[in-house]
Image (cartoon, rainbow, N blue to C red; front, side, top):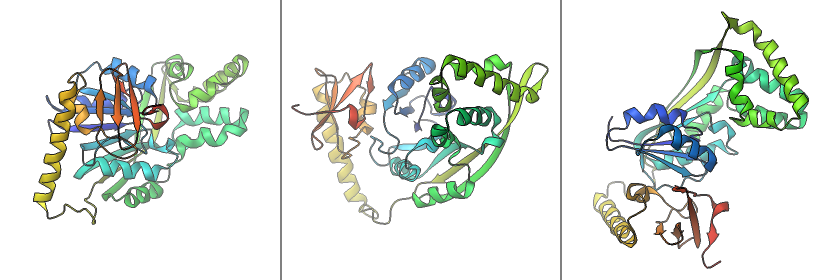
Length: 320
């Protein structure tokens, strides 16, 4: 459906965002949220589209008002959340009632050899990091993933195991993002010394040789796709009270207009939905300091290279 607001959580270098851009419509809005500002810079450069809005944010404390989005997607990110249930609850909160969230996670290591073999090689060399390495496969149980969606308040929950064939032109092409540190497991790989890295590379290359066909790597990879629809909480004070809801929307619109009058250089479409991740209160834009101010939380969130850094550990105390 055109002219939609879509949130891509853990957007990384923008793989899922790139696929979403063609479907949001001419006046749609695609927000890419990631906890790493450097990844957002890469995603912005890759997409190079005015409809894409990068925001540094924790997926477990999203800085957006309730009911902001028509869809939330999270590709290969939820398994790394310290509390995936809390993350899904946030996805549900920022969705409009009836809208959907979808997540994609990796299956078990043996059913995802392109990651599983590297994880196995690293786990043997760094046993103290084995738990961190295996986070990539932490949500491989479809029953658990379904339960997490239901506990977060989603309806019409479905989880399916999807197998696809992945073809890479050569081992070197497959290894390039690993050597570049793209992803959590490659980051651990880069922590090894040069000799150990070479040994890991050769081991994985040998293991993957059974997937070589006409010089290409051809592997089948199993993923889990979970999706569900957001519902209005039973204790929503505005159920059946369209007049009260209209008053709230009107008051908030007036407040946004006042903030917008202070300085219009910050993207008004983004400012309309951005909220303090601590209090969910409105934000003021300070053009002189280049910050977004939350007075109820007594915090100022920086804006770096036009990216709002909505992370509490990056914020400063007002007057401090």
